[in-house]
Amino acid sequence: GENVEQHPSTLSVQEGDSAVIKCTYSDSASNYFPWYKQELGKRPQLIIDIRSNVGEKKDQRIAVTLNKTAKHFSLHITETQPEDSAVYFCAASGNTPLVFGKGTRLSVIA
Amino acid sequence: ETGVTQSPTHLIKTRGQQVTLRCSSQSGHNTVSWYQQALGQGPQFIFQYYREEENGRGNFPPRFSGLQFPNYSSELNVNALELDDSALYLCASSLARGQETQYFGPGTRLLVL
Image 1: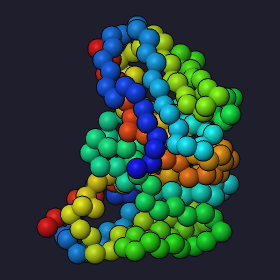
Image 2 (image 1 turned 120 degrees about the horizontal axis):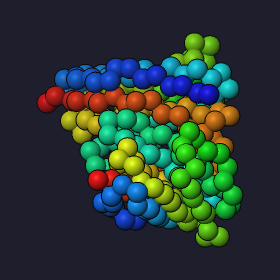
Image 3 (image 1 turned 120 degrees about the vertical axis):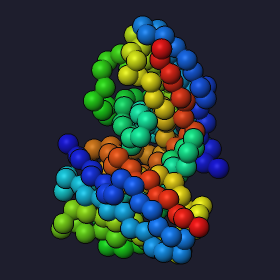
């Protein structure tokens, strides 16, 4: 089945800097890759997703890139703000239901 | 606001008991997936329901069972509770099965003593 690895597990950045979180997946049939943000005690919220027919997608300060050959995808957050502090999860699905990574705790230091 | 609701928000049970968790999907969504999220981990897929039928199951024992009703709301039942069942239980609804965007509810936090 699908296996998703996510790095790093924790990430601290200064406010205004960029943050990058990387994920790899194992199942070449996976073709849908969402990213969720989960604040403490809250539900996971979809922030961006990408399908395998595109290589990059942007939404304001957030972008996701996908390399299907290498089976990895990344989340890029530019001009980070304190409210970006949360746990971020990547996930992948194709022939299987969504499989999540273990999460990255992002801390943005003001 | 995603529109997915879950009840109850918190629950405390003892080992061996049974529990039922409930989820109302977002309007227009016919697919509900259930996940278990242990502390510090990502959500793990339990099973999915599409139009009242189970449509895929993760690596969970048969004491985890579910239902979906004609209005697409859903229940998760867990029998013979174990300490390791303590977790946040999330449901997510989507427009259809497959690679559709999933929207999560707020979760039910279950503590088994």
